[in-house]
Amino acid sequence: MSREGIDLETSLGYLLKEASSALRVAMEEVLRPLGMSVTHYSCLELLAQRPGLSNSQLARGAFVTRQSMNVLLQALERDGYVARAAQPSVGKALPTRLTPRGRRSLLRATAAVRSVELRMVAGLSEADQAAALRILRSMVHALREPPGPADEAARG
Amino acid sequence: MSREGIDLETSLGYLLKEASSALRVAMEEVLRPLGMSVTHYSCLELLAQRPGLSNSQLARGAFVTRQSMNVLLQALERDGYVARAAQPSVGKALPTRLTPRGRRSLLRATAAVRSVELRMVAGLSEADQAAALRILRSMVHALREPPGPADEAARG
DNA sequence: GCACATGTGTCAGACTCCTGACATGAGCCG
DNA sequence: CGGCTCATGTCAGGAGTCTGACACATGTGC
Image (cartoon, rainbow over all chains, first blue to last red; front, top):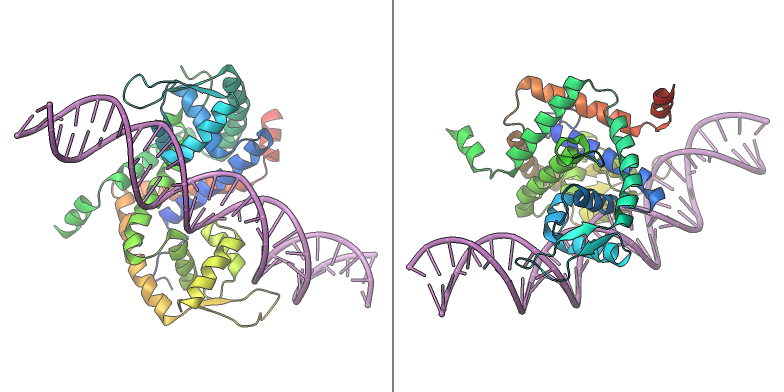
């Protein structure tokens, strides 16, 4: 039956996409009442944990391009959620920080997102959660390496 | 340090998005030489495993909207990769099937995607892979349930 | 000093995908 | 039958994102 092709029922890749899609939908649901998108929230959360991040650093952390993050940052700055340095201290990077308003806005969003994460891991034991962290980290690491070594190992 | 906010280093949600993003990038890399996007490949793979799927069913399987899948299907039909029934057999759904050309195109894509999946699970034991399947399925299931029961259980 | 590669901010254009809306067809129930 | 709900296909419009390009700042090696 599945001689050719990839069995979607047992494919880790497909399941990974399915889980990520479900998570995204769930996050959008709880963030919409707050007038916030996932990227919007990600940006604020990143700034809360690592104050002074530049536009490019935020973009990498939120998995979007510099250009997309730049559009978002301009809106956030205009609305008073973040403040960017007027002039770069080093290089061209402009450090960004949360304003008190941004911090307050993030508090509600974090609570909403945390409830989603709790729902997601509801059926998992502590050991399962630890295993998930380890396994996902391994996948990320393996995917970011160039395909060379794997193929050579397969051939050799 | 992380009294407020969600620690991104130990957040399953963030790691899930990170892994999914890395997988998407890796798949785009190997599919680009074939002139194929991820959604494009997903559509063909779905049709290979479940011939006769309708536009809406394909959209759900590829995690896009009916509208997006419809645009893709029109292009695939125009280029001779798939064939759609001229008239609906039941309801309004138009069953879609792969043409021989579509099947040939899918063969190359499947090989490319399989290499990415192999790279992704390179560092994982058999037990790890089985655990990952079980854990991801649990997450998907939990996220698709309405948040009601979880909150009630937390209160009760 | 000079050339080069890398990282960054920014502008413009185009593209993908989604939201909203409408009409059609099937199933259910009074 | 008539009304309701649900699922599907399709059309139009808009929000978000990406690709391409350019200028500037830093570090490295000659």
